[in-house]
Length: 271
Figure 1: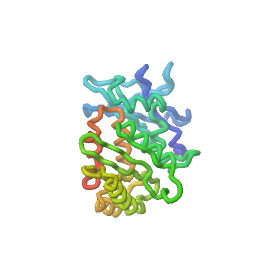
Figure 2: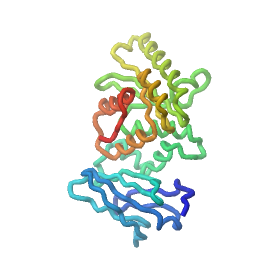
Figure 3: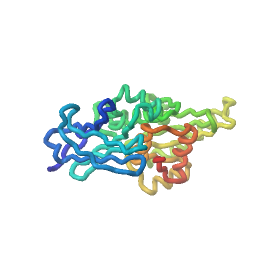
Figure 4: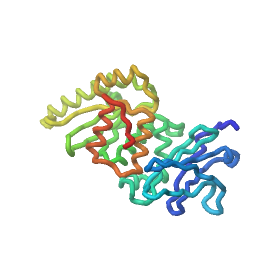
């Protein structure tokens, strides 16, 4: 069977029943498989069925000593969705828990970060998704997406971090190839640094830039960005950050250093 609408296949975890439920057209069900990968490096196939309660899905069978897992859902061998599952409520972080109240299973957030088609526009929703992701990870982030006039060329958001190493990070979001964003962001970093200095508060504040890209960057883009000390966070790294929402987080200073360190080293984001 040809899977013509992969975005119509989505998994979610129902904590009250301990089941992974797969929402998909009934005609696709026999082609759907799911596997859980636990934090003790054990994996298991999930036997999906039409349960008497809770719909098409499977009960999670947790190995001893495990607290979270990544579930991959495939259709004819192609991964169509993945989700982070917490064994116990409260084992993640506060920001993710709050987001889960408004966006069950982080479904909207995952679609926005994948730049899925939507009525509000892929670029607009991608920007909103990045800001929500950063906020859920514990960062103080302000959106400046609604810019007008000469300010339209300025970055989409800013992280203001004053714990540990004081940092201000300009955030640029794009659903296209990030090459054309690099030089402009480097200029804006210099402008903001000078502006803070003119206000008498720039001393000891590190001003950086980061690009979140829904498109995988090519080698030349990564090299050019690294020359400007600007990390490009591509689709894989965005998914890694999204996965970390379901886990206890390191200090924000440590996590921000990991993200900014991508300018020099590949960001794994899986610790």
